[in-house]
Length: 265
Image (tube, one colour):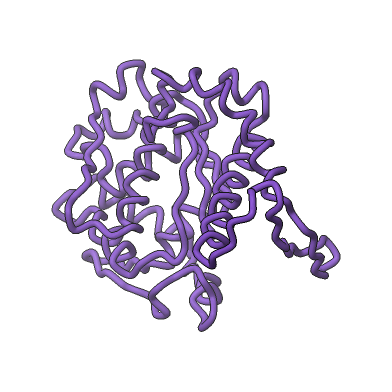
């Protein structure tokens, strides 16, 4: 399970297979390879053409249905990606620098270290304008995001931390639940909202003059040159932190290209 992210930049592959079609084929290929690896680990060396597995899914009426999926069918569908991969070379939306690198994921469970990392990125009162923007956003929302607690319940796969992390920033208190909702549960992220998130979490420089900061909702043509991306990989990053940095990289490119970042949580 994962949060899927897609930079909504139109291209030949998306026009050919659709965004969802590409995502389904990428996931199908990964699932097929995982099944093959599992069979091989257990000493089953049958050809991939003979390997199948049961896939359960919830139906719209709340029931569960199970069907047998053949690995070869997933691999055949994924093979349709290959002739389109060259379009990704040099694409401005290729965040991950690989075929279909405009699509990424944040895998569950989200680590406690990653939630703390997000809280520690927020502006403090010594950064008056970004902090005031954050304060206004928190106060205007009047929402403690307590519904996220259900995702933290025992047995749920979404969070490593079962409790809510809290940070006090001067006159406001921000929780990890609020940040998760702010980032991932507000629907597809349009450029204006992307700018706000990039500022809140310091993914772009925020020591800017007030007029400049307030006009970032529509990124200028030279945005990616004027406002360099601030996050780099570090040796101590766990999987969740590394994937969050890739997420902010996607958000940054989407903002710079003036397109949405699509989310599937």
